Image (cartoon, rainbow, N blue to C red; front, side, top):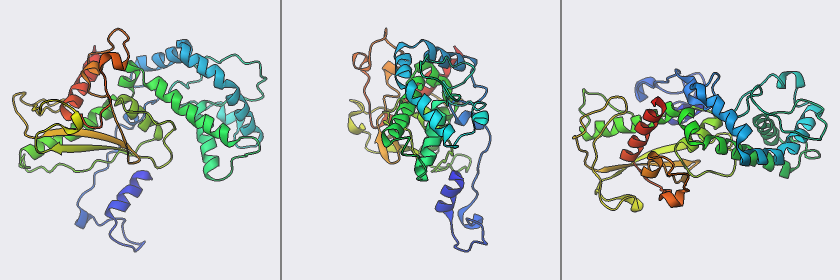
Length: 341
């Protein structure tokens, strides 16, 4: 429904309810690709890579910081689960069969020991967040049992949990590689088209691509693209915007580099002549709900790997508002090579 609503808002040409939501003759063809749905979420079943689930399990059962945080938050999960069952918001028989989310697979999840008696199956954190948020949005959250602080603690912890797991360098590569690759290739396709004055076989390149996805997809992309992390889970209707900027004067934007860079236009999977030079510089910028998020993606230190566990400051990694498209291309190529290796 989100994709349909956006398309209607962009191309609606009639107020009559009996007419189509947009006029195809006036607005041209609109292609909606429904393939590759599993590539649009970070936690498909089965996972796209066999090692992905094993790595999720390793983080949730062996990472000391993660385990400590889970133990701290576990009593809240037990208490809120019991409330949701007792207030008849959840069917215990059905809820116990449902399993989704990064690091939430019940068969692989190691329960944290608790002295508190468990009346019902404990809901996963993503279930607690989804149910609580739906109730809050409809003014149905039982505030006598679930306080505003409880609600905020749940939402903040779920965001922290997903960001922590998907920030793992190897896991973030596996989660949404195909979508990240597609985003960069779309930008490069337009640059190639523009640099050839739009005459390549008479084919026009779209100025806008829309991807309809879940909130978990936004989390996965923010981790995979090494963006700054918001403190809360993306709300309903949130959107992640990737913009392509052109620096016509050939000078670097906002201190991205010391000298103007000229690089080859190379498509991912369809590499062109490396000697072919482009004129202006091109940059990507990311924002969540129109709030710009800086990124350390494309940094040589990121591409070259962890330098013996050094932190970002020691490795010279900085967050930038504008990411050179060349560096984004190199990061995607490294991502593919590292997974193949």
